[in-house]
Image (cartoon, rainbow, N blue to C red):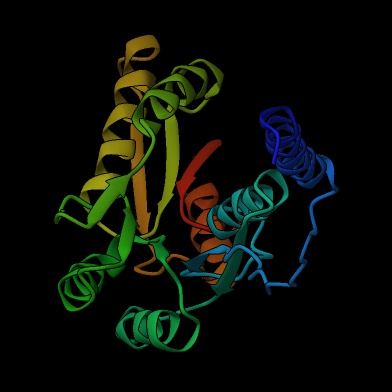
Length: 236
């Protein structure tokens, strides 16, 4: 075969191969689609254990306003709550919220819930707990509160200025550090503007008992108290 013919054949083969390669490269790629199920993101579940009813227009009502705001503000949060829980029963509710409800975080909202919350923290180390007004903590158990005594001091200033009899009444729930701190701050405020005034305290030994609170308030008024303050959960 003449050399020129051989050269032409080789060039033709190369051109064919290159053209085929270019054609393959330019051909639209075949797309294979496959539906993979995607799980919806899991919500953070938060539980609230209340000492009183959410309709008390006081302590528990304020906590529940916060709970509802949490759900409204953060759509990835789901909440559950239990109201009017006795101190003796809080451990059982903590177990239920963790085991049955699947809560990741639990808020216990009363001083008397402290020890049960600590026990739950030790029992469920992979969960988080927050206790209101207490002083015991663990790696997964925190505390929270507000400096209410400052407000009670201001209330005391007003009470001391308003009283005409020099007798001020105070309806209080339990003799625990939180409540005693409130009474002391209030009394300091009263006596700062009215040094001779007295503050008479009535203990309920309950957080929520509207009838007992009313009775205590009326007895203070009967004894000459013309200004009243309180630390308990009902609108005295």
